[in-house]
Amino acid sequence: MNLHPPTLLLCSVLAMAMSAALMTVFGFTQRVYRGYAHWTTAQALAALGLGLHLVRDTHPLILPLANLLVLQWPVLLLAGLRRFYQRNEMPLPAAFDWMLLVGGYLLWLTTWVAQTDLMWRIAAFSFAAAVLLLYTAALLMRLDSYATSTGLKTLSVALFMSCAMHVWRMLHSVITRHNPESAINLLLAGAVIAVLLSFMMVYLALLLTYERTQHDLGESQRLLRELANIDMLTQVPNRRHFHELAARVLAAPASAGAALLMFDVDHFKGINDRFGHRAGDEALCDVAQSLRNSLRAGDVAGRLGGDEFVVLLPHTSSDDAVGVASRIVDPLSGQRPVPLGLSFGVVRVQPGESVDAALHRADQALYEAKRQGRSCAVVASGDNDNPVFAESMPLGLV
Image (cartoon, rainbow, N blue to C red; front, top):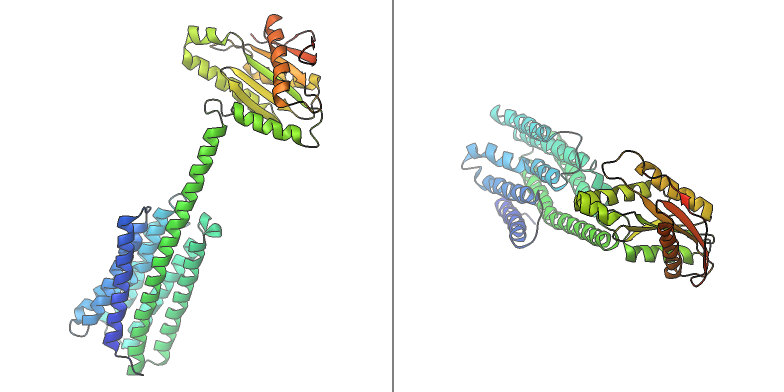
């Protein structure tokens, strides 16, 4: 069956126009990201360029514009990818993309101006298109998101396949350069390649947008979890999250021999009253930073509220826990705009003891540390009803 070339070309133009229209409607009705407008524009311009080919026989001077509009597709696609993945730096600047487009276009334009054989002009255009497609595929494979993005992987495959089709078109035009029928078929093949890429881009644009939406949703959920679990001022777990983490650690079979530290800032209300709440917040942040820097990977810290902090130290004796308290204190010693003092209550977590019960005993030890003069650590043994307090150990805060 012989196909009517003008009819086939018209169908190709309508198909590309429809794909551009679909992307435009989606862009106006759904949430899209930076770069999507470039993809839609690339589709529309390529459809316009292919449409101009319908009148190339009656208006031959329009052919340079038509081929430029078709040839721009990979470069405008790449411009959109640069904006869509703006945090991913590409190895070559955007200016190089356009220089490559200009170079490929001038290669074809030279053959057209020189009025060379049609098959050589087809070969020149196919060579330029193949280079642009290969270049675009190579750059997008360098994106950090490529390894995890189904859309980018699919797009690279489509670009490589289109490049291979243009290489075939170029070689075939050189081999059969004296066959008029082959020239018509090769011209139509170029239109078919453009249409296939156009329809593929509709799917890929939606897929990339979906992937970005899923990524943003995941980031939002992660941020919400962080807001729910982390004290925003001090960047340590809040009371609820500390209880969850500590209960998980104590429930582990290898958690025997844990120590619990509870401490607060001495005369914290006086710091707020004398120096202002901003100074009080800065003091809490300094204490929290020293706390984070003093802990091991398996230790669990938390802010119980106000100026009160707690630390669970797995596989730690009471003496070692006092050493941890000293490490927390050391960076806070010396000359400071706002003098700081910390008081510590230290207990060993008993077998089968709950987090709340251990916290209650540590709170009793902390109260005893304040009674014995503050800026010290007191170790408590025994149970809640009959606690036994050791002599306080000064920690040397100014």
